[in-house]
Amino acid sequence: MAENADLARRVHEAWNERNFDEIAEVTAPDATITIVGSGDIFTGVDGARAYNMMWANGFPDGEVTVDRVIESGDHVVVEFTGRGTHTGTLVTSMGEIPATGRSLTLELCDVMEFKDGKVRSQKTYFDTGSMMAQLGLAAEQTASQDK
Image (tube, rainbow, N blue to C red):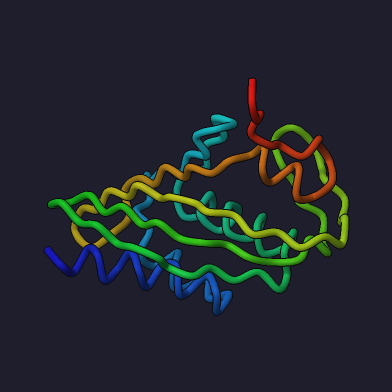
């Protein structure tokens, strides 16, 4: 089953290379990618391309670093760090976010399910509040002290 962990890692490496064809090749025709915080769902091979292009267009210099991969059967959890500069328009279901020119570092987590060597589902978790604050679009979030 280590093949699923290797495939999950490779999907993230392919994003760094902007090799969206490779990602499409390992995506099941009925696969779903869900952004958990917003509930956005991308379906199938075209959805996988749209999801990955959305991030690449918003952060053209973006890169991810895989921090940890945990596998259990057909499920793989990938903790990773995304870094980039918001120099492109980030198109979301809530509207377009024009380039801010700000740098961003986010910790993310993908929970992926595989079947027959293909991604069947991917749930992506990240702190949207932190993302918006780093882009200068929301107040900085800080822990309260001495309350």
